[in-house]
Image (cartoon, rainbow, N blue to C red; front, side, top):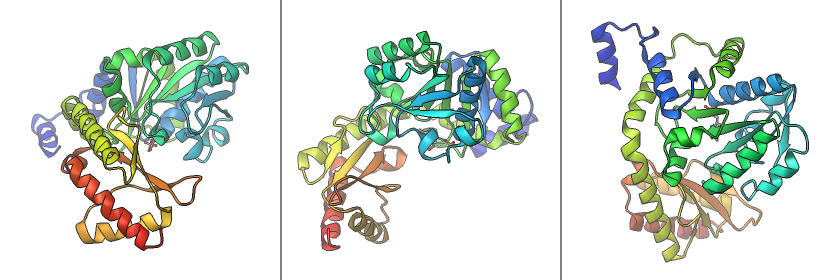
Length: 338
Ligand SMILES: Cc1ncc(COP(=O)(O)O)c(C=O)c1O
């Protein structure tokens, strides 16, 4: 990234100008995703709310449907409602992907949009089969609703579908991708869509304070990540598959799904969340290894789980080393009282 910064300084390109990193990134992602326009946003939270707002205003409809675990409902303080006057139609079982039958029921009410999250993070990165996804999107669009993709981890999803990004994005009226998750950038998001939707989205971005002029370091970080992406992602997925297989062959914990669809999966443990958190802290203090971002509780208080997303850090561990760490974690958790 530093090298790229120096290149900019050397050739005198104004970093916030038409050939600066934000503009270059927007053009590159529009092309990669096969959309007319790609618009930088400071966050995915803002980008998605704006996309839904534009779809809703255009259709004169206020409700959108999404999975119960949708980031829009769980993590955004219902901004879709308090800021944009939209309504969330909770769709499907919280432990399963949205089914076509769920969507048929949802579109009985005229919807502005339906949101698909690919992969579904809180389900360990599950993905609908391609034919099912195509069928669902066609059904929803026939009802007059827009199809929106929460593609925070679209790069991961692509390793399962093995289709060009543009073919996946073509199913949707609007696509949000994150600039910091798989790309290992700093922050930021891009909304890729048709020129008309982007024109109105740009106005909303300004209204919400997202039209920042000095976003170029974020774009530069994302461009650096994009360069490495193609070679990295399939290797991450292969490694995730190998780790999940080793964990399940060992049997002390359970990896799900097995095989993982993407570089992401869950490890379920026969111990309580509190005990596992304590054991994780001890493991971190002793070995300097952090296994998760957060431990997830479940309906059974004697069990919990955590998410594994294979990236550069996880590539440094062999599947057997991960199994050993899980063993040590469980032994410590059971000593902490299970
Ligand atoms: C699936 C999903 N959608 C949207 C977002 C929002 O992105 P941001 O953190 O850029 O607001 C996140 C962030 O974690 C996410 O995981």
